[in-house]
Image (cartoon, rainbow, N blue to C red; front, side):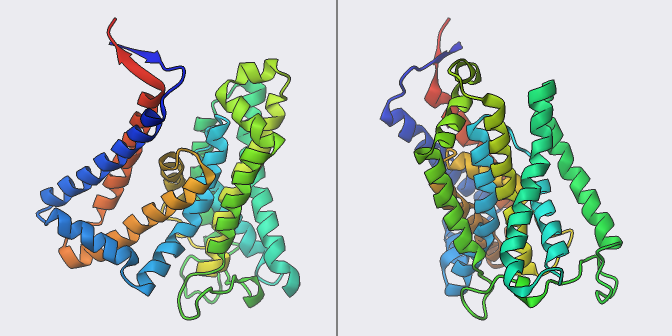
Length: 347
């Protein structure tokens, strides 16, 4: 058997195979619940209730989806140009560091929110720019460099929280000085944790969709992603496009860190992100790299995580089932995308 490319995949193939991937994910979740000794349908129902069954649950799901939208957009933008940004976790933490540095009284009240957001995004973009320049100038694989930067940034955060940025009033806990009130994003619903970072994430998704479909840069990103050699032959400045893509992708990932610190935590800590940067890759792939699809995908993934917490308490099933289900969802979707573009033939 060998793989043969399909020149023009049919609509049924392009829509049907991803749908089958989602169905396979659902069946796998039911099988895992059964293996754990629970009623599969009851477990799925409890996940749904835990994710959207009340006002509190729904807002928690939206809250969890906020950083996933940002990191999902970061991955979708980069992957569209075949720039494999695996360093969204590092960019997220750098955005959080900048937010704390500027949001603890260094700026006037009226400027602190927009300036911290802009500088955090710029820092995240510049962090990704290094691996991109290594890729374009020396042919260094960006998967390796961006992945390694994640560990470097986590060590840097650990050092900062035990040293220069440690809160002297934190009773020994490794966390930063809290942000001033003016640097905090207000809550959308008083008394609950959902903040205006969610609305900004939706605006970011709409902006990326407009860029990709209505601008010259979006056309160039798609062209470079489809065939870098053909794009260069057509006169597209490939290296310049990759640099712009890096700044955009890294900036979006950094905004996830900004929104988590300014909107939710109020300070920097090592557990700020439970892997939002890596989960953003799953979000982007489930959305087929579509910016608006990223919002739907992030809500789905956030619902699985939030609902699994509630399900675990009610049914006694480990929450790790959510991690397995999302990993299987990614594998199924990658397989579906592969079979959309290629068919198996004898020979």
